Length: 204
Ligand SMILES: [Zn+2]
Image (cartoon, rainbow, N blue to C red; front, side):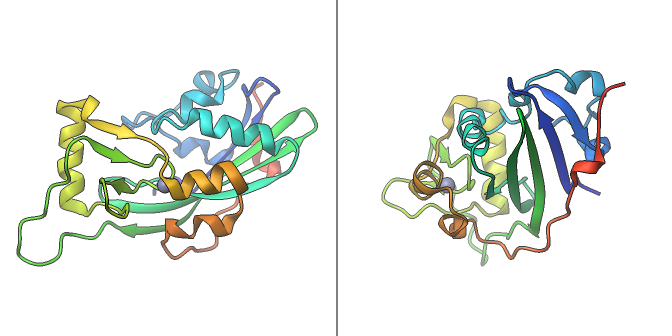
């Protein structure tokens, strides 16, 4: 069962004070589980570096100390498309953050009998919505075959894959933070699995 939600309590330096119970399913990208000693007292940024988004999240969390925030974002794998929600709110000097999965769908295959069209190089993705963008084209998600190609490319030539925020996400994240600016993330959302404050455990 893949992880459904994970929650952190961070101190004023964004170090992890506590992590909610679904932690037991939280894993490194290589599949190895995190151990409490690896997490408590560490800064949260080490956990959200994968898409180069640490700085974006940092700016959001600074704002969340003044006003609670709730935003949708995409976190896709090669085989699955997933919509996630991040919620953050202040708890005195600490910050409560919760990431929850709200929808998952299999990644569609290329249509028809034609071999799938390979995306051009360099491959540019938005770190927030995961769409691939090409010059003079509307950003969109890659199908399964294109994603397999992109994954291979990422391994043999990491510098040919670039992450930057697309115009739609920049507008939503920089100017407004309102959920209606993230409708382009698509996927039919379900009721997110919730992690409550009381599920937090602290180091002994
Ligand atoms: Zn985007």
